[in-house]
Amino acid sequence: MEGDTFSGLGNGAQVDNKILQTFQKSFVQVQNILDQNRLLINEINQNHESRIPDNLSRNVGLIRELNNNIRRVVDLYADLSSNFTRSMEVSSEGDSSGKSGQKRNRPG
Picture 1 (cartoon, rainbow, N blue to C red):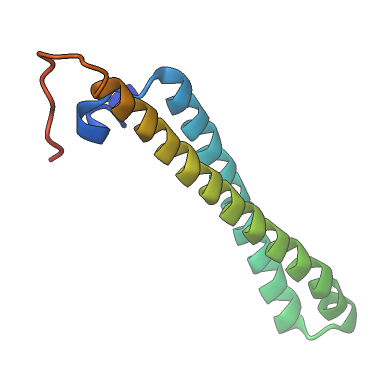
Picture 2: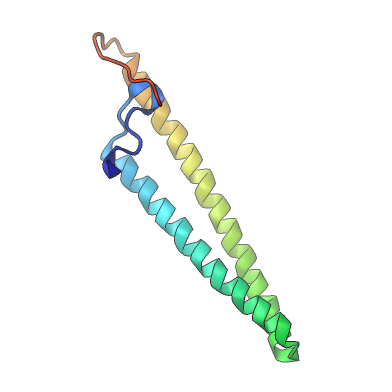
């Protein structure tokens, strides 16, 4: 079932394995960044609660890193969205290329 995640989308179109691997890679990248953000936020909170001047100064750099990570996540999701849209357009072009007799699956 894991490999069938996107099968049946786009009016029954089958999304090929290369596209699924690209999506998987992007989702893993996003998850890694989010995990890193969780650690950054924890460190920022600890530094803030300590009220130690050096720790508070360190937060400036940590918050910049957090903001950059958030930008990277937004960019990855934007790329995922455009790649998904493009793959669905290619799949639907294949569906409308005169292939008759193919059964279309309804989602859900």
